[in-house]
Image 1 (cartoon, rainbow, N blue to C red):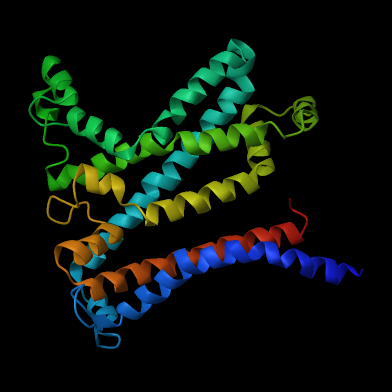
Image 2: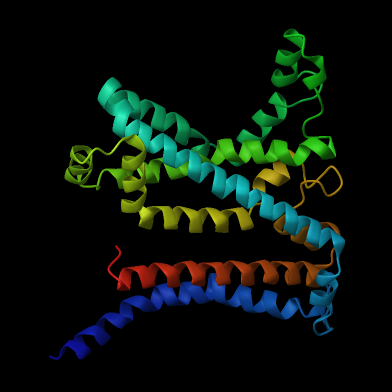
Length: 299
């Protein structure tokens, strides 16, 4: 039997997965794409209106406000946690594990990762209590220290709502890059760092060497975190529901509002399709870059 016949024989095992993909992802995607070109309240027959929903989105100040908020959320979900995760992972792997032992490092690693396994609703409720303007823990601490000027309505003031949510997202997300980078550092050949030490490299040089060696993992973390930020919904729903006003609204929540609160399903689908297109473009760009580096033998 030739290798081609053998490979075709394995194709039958792909049928269940492919059928499930079409049912769960392919069909809803095509339906949502069609609805985005219609005016539909969710009941009755959709009325085809062409690209009117997309034109409306291009001139909708609320949509652009949500888009700007989403860009800031990328900073809070991807940039800051990735940078902190890199610094913490190098410190914990290169210094803390030698000084305090692997069990201590494992304890702190689990602590940093804990927000990732907490249900979003519970984490949101806890942070809602902490930031409550009247009896929240944060304002109570400020008042007890005589810093009454710092006690404010963190999630209810348009000036502080978005920075507060961004801070919560940094806390929520740090554990993810930390765990990935700690695992990645374990595959770095220690002889490379020892050779660098012999040549007079200090901690800064070794940090750069570690960054270079774990570039594949950094790329994966940046890609997955950016996509996660673009799809962010649950935390916004639990903490602020997009408010006050449009201070914390993001495209996914704006689409939800149009779907279920304004019963403007066509416009909500158009917003969802725009964000889907952005995510696909980003994903293709990241994967193309990764494959190019792999083809050049960079990793």
